Length: 99
Image (cartoon, rainbow, N blue to C red; front, side):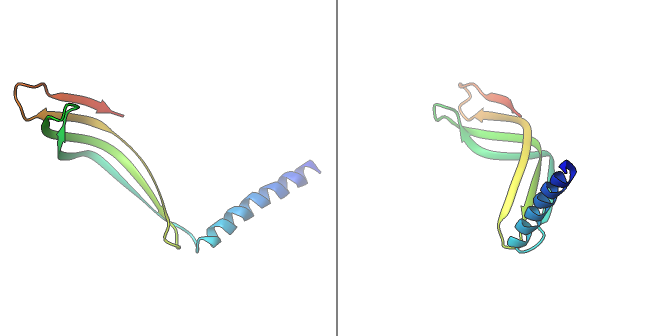
């Protein structure tokens, strides 16, 4: 009897998942993008508003799932280094690690 209850519960979970996929118009399309030593240079400033140039160098992975009805689910992770080169040479520059 216990096995029958477990089998019924398992079937219900699978059926609910299949129903959810059909409600969104069919099977999803997934993509994965990886980044290695990607570099981004943008204008920036320190906490006091002193202008400078930020440089980000990072690695990461980005997963996207797109459903037939058009909605998406996106998740990802990134880690790397950043630096702020303040334009005024009399002020300090900054650098750090993001993980």
